[in-house]
Amino acid sequence: MWDDGAWAPLPELPGDVEADVCVIGLGGSGLACVLELLALGRRVVGLDAGTVGGGAAGRNGGFLLAGLPAFYHQAAKDLGRDRAQAIYRRTMVELDRMTEETPEAIRRSGSLRIADDAIELHDCDAQLQMMLADRLPAEPYDGPEGRGILVPTDGAFNPLQRCRALARRALAGGARLFEQSAAITMRGDLVRTVRHGVHCSSVIVAVDGGLERVLPELAPRVRTARLQMLATAPVLDLDLPRPVYRRWGYEYWQQLPDRRIALGGLRDRSGDGEWTDVARSTDAVQRGLDRVLRDQLGVTAPVTHRWAGAVGYSANGLPVVDEVRSGVWAMGGYSGTGNILGALCGRGVAQLAVTGRSELLSELWSPA
Ligand SMILES: Cc1cc2nc3c(=O)[nH]c(=O)nc-3n(C[C@H](O)[C@H](O)[C@H](O)COP(=O)(O)OP(=O)(O)OC[C@H]3O[C@@H](n4cnc5c(N)ncnc54)[C@H](O)[C@@H]3O)c2cc1C
Image 1 (tube, helix red, strand yellow):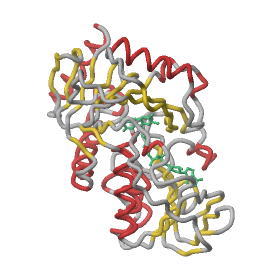
Image 2: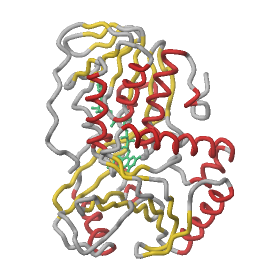
Image 3: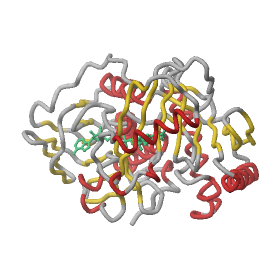
């Protein structure tokens, strides 16, 4: 649905090459990392097992929500208020930076959290009160979508368009990027694909869904789940100016500028079979999404696309950022909200790998 068909495929890794840093995974996080490494003057090789943005980064819901996966008041309870607030502000700054970087792909429309019942409305109020007390942008909302919270600074985007724009910029900046080049083994000075190798001084693994398959030592900390979506033909009799996050975030939709609806969710009602990295849609979940589309939104337009993607859920709700082997850094596990967090971590891990420190990750990462 996000694909405009204008991508010229990149070559496979053609032989043994040398670089300062090898980045594995060319989604939003890996590409943010590549660009930061270039800015730090490093020679970069990037490998993707599939295509640029072919993972979750190019097939997601397109929401740009500041903060952590947990709602703000919950994050404050879990992490302490100062830390939760500092992380929230970092993601707001990152979203501003992303908007400046690829303005063609991003709309700063604001976002809605809409309550499904009185209990959730009460929770929305608790979130709102804490955000207001901490001077974060939020307002009460009561409109055609329902009642809840409006976060006026959030946004929406075409995630694949942004990935491709970042990749083109990285190529123009001197990065060597290769598609269809899966990393099979990796240590700090060598990454091997089936046929060739990248000799380097450090490696950064930027894989969200399937991270524990690529680096099995992360299995206790991250688990992969499948998320599913559908999209419709243009809906002319509905006007949704902002993305909607409803029923504790388990149902979400947005209307694109061309009036198509993209809708996803139901992870809570999908059963254990959705703990998988197989990015294929299933009848059971898609039937549920159809019901949300028809019964809740009242949309009758035909469904044109159905798809799935894999994402990593972390055990503690914070992204995984770590040097997991000597010279091998890993990031992922954004628990379903990696569009801003992934960019932040990508840039932060680039700084950590090169300089040993990163202000960007002050609240998200601490040395072992
Ligand atoms: C349906 C769906 C809806 C979502 N909605 C939202 C949303 O609205 N807002 C939000 O913030 N987040 C959302 N997410 C989550 C978000 O998409 C992800 O957290 C984020 O895109 C992760 O980006 P990434 O670059 O870290 O990882 P990925 O996009 O998964 O990229 C990793 C890349 O690594 C490659 N790779 C894997 N293994 C190897 C290997 N061995 N060698 C080389 N390359 C390899 C893959 O091919 C892939 O291209 C959603 C996800 C899905 C699936």
